[in-house]
Image (cartoon, rainbow, N blue to C red; front, side):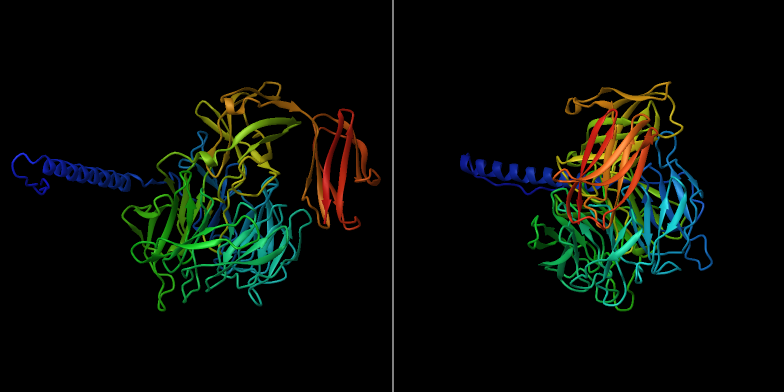
Length: 610
């Protein structure tokens, strides 16, 4: 049925009337076109859900973690005797790089403890840290998984009940761990080099049930539980400072829950509340408070009481929500799904993974993970069926990494460039899961075949680093055939421009060309390398050396006046990577120089002792 438009009446040849009528008609038609375009955007803006071809071996039991070799480890409810589970399933993309058609395995060694709702972080060296568990035997215990040895190593006790606590990796690679015990304000700091905890600073308010957000200055922001007060952890000061007040309540008063938080591409923070309210935060960039303003409410009286969400490569946020909690039902169902567009300041509803508009489950059982191919992996707890969400639109240019240089050190490569850590941490949930992906992956493509190298020892754990230089090490897959490949660096699913990489029959590798002018200075050289991690050091650090050839190595520590403080090494060493542990407790706080002398030359690195 055609729409009836109002008729304009003018008497005679009144030109003024015709002109006004023409303007009204033009404005009406312009508004109509705008509404049509807006409606089209609403219809076609959403991405698409696709079920994975293969079912997982076990029922999903929570968090999914992206390893630095491109595989995914997914917590399940299998293993142990309490129904909580200590088994992880592993998802490996197929030969064409498809996670949709990827294969599942049960090859990951089970954890020592059973855990449900716990802290997790991918460490700088590619290992995986987990701690606590609201349910299971691991509430007061942590452990670290090494993908190279397929083994879990227990950490010391975190000196308190961790439960469903938050955690965040710090600039030096240590992990700030919240403790859900006592005042609910305590923290510990885990050192992965020494496998030790030290006491961290207490929060000003209660951190339990909060979501933590990393900002570009490496500070960590959260809203105190069941209040509108916020605070930040300043790593350089090792202390929490008071921040601004939130204009809306994010915590519901019943389960005291809240939702996910994200660093937006424009530099603001965005927090989803269990109450249905949301808020924007503009950081100050220093220790002074930032500013909060209310953002749009989640439509249809929906909220996010512990709910998965993911920043997509197009800058929009995919989020799971449910009806706002009540005194009689803290975790209502069903779950609905929206895309949030920060540019339009609006939510658009999208279909559920199985079709229709909702999933018959509470939103706290949803799980999301950003994949290296630009898609989002999704699953509901207690299900073997996983889904891929493919967003519409193009990846954000601001999140695109660049490659500047690759150096060869035996079987290890160091890649240098910018924006290796992305512009957000990836996916978010609340306090129960951390599944950050703001670290670089290396992908190689030959024809339709896709391979992922294993990255480690990336120099940053930050977000939105702009033009600051980034580095990471990588090793090639052992089964990588000889030939020529297109190589990219990927951060949160956004890839760099490609560089041509050749693996020769002599098992040597080199960069042979570059596909874009922005990276025209790309080179590859065989050199010896010297790195120190963590740096600054507090108690102990590790000196990493990479030798391009078997060489005699003389390694010493000097103070800034040139006086030799300690001799660490004076011997022949084979080609490849080596690690030397240095106890710094006997050194006076300050700056030192670690010097490595080989027949190929001298490499120096500054060491800061705290």
